Amino acid sequence: MKMVSAIIKHFKLDEVRDALNKLGVQGMTAIEVKGFGRQKGHMEVYRGVEYEVKFLPKVKLEVAIPEEKLEEVLKAIQSTAKTGEIGDGKIFIYNLEDAVRIRTGEQGEGVL
Image (cartoon, rainbow, N blue to C red; front, side, top):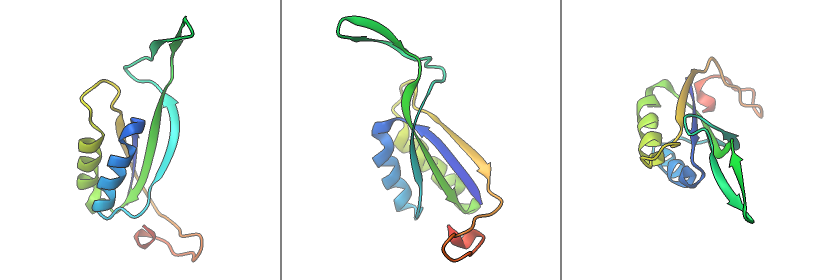
């Protein structure tokens, strides 16, 4: 099993969610986060005062998937989250040792 964690722009969340649902991904977690990468933030003006925004708002999307779905999930996230602009985000892949369904105690890939 794999855990895929993607940092994407807010307005791309619905597109990515729909693309993953079409692939049969049954569950995901979306978390509002702030951070920066190469973008390093930007300057904004509010009521005539200029200030620096160092941490930009993003969405962190996490999905646990069977290993055989990894490539199609990565392609779906990348193609739907891409705008071609700096700050599109990153995808991280982790090995997932086990998973447990709390309600039943069931373990393994069947809980995904």
